[in-house]
View 1 (tube, rainbow, N blue to C red):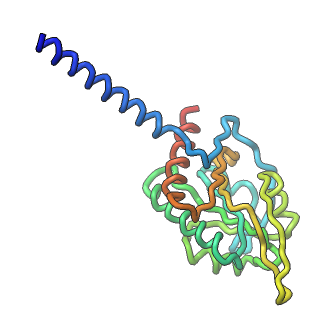
View 2 (tube, one colour):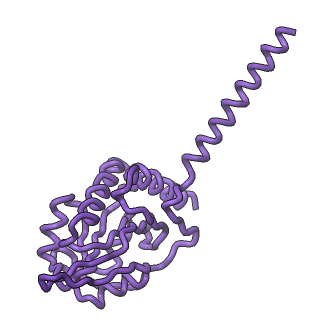
View 3 (cartoon, rainbow, N blue to C red):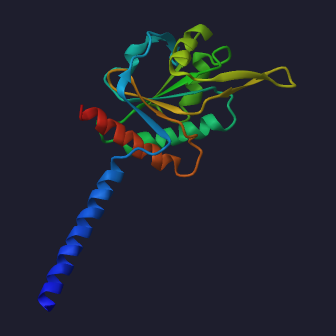
Length: 208
């Protein structure tokens, strides 16, 4: 009888261990509630802008490498610098992996954000960031395609500030839009969440 009980305990322990292992694997392959993944990758429209080196660039900058896009402006007091700081940490996390993303910072204030200002700004975070600016209508091609909301608010001193969507957009190496991380990156655990979700999306794309 004792032997049967011991066998039963061993089997139960094995079953529990297998269940917990499967649940762990399942969790590891699940996205957080903050991230959307598009099984059917979405094409981006053809765009032409200036980069931070004052060069004309197009969609080709998104080819052959994973990219994370973020929209902001150089006069942004907190959201933009916080987000770019976290995104550079994401880069470091994948520094030795083929999926290391390039960061693309797109100005929603191109009237003030000249290539020179963009270069000075992004170089304070990483040398692996592409800054995009240009004429407003050029930027609107991208913001309208991705549904990026932003608006200009006048300040008492005659200048203005910009309210804008603070999510990040994940682009696969074919230059297609495959993921959206909606959480503001200054939130608690946002770095850990984005690292996890980015890795999950790259696995999903690789398995197609």
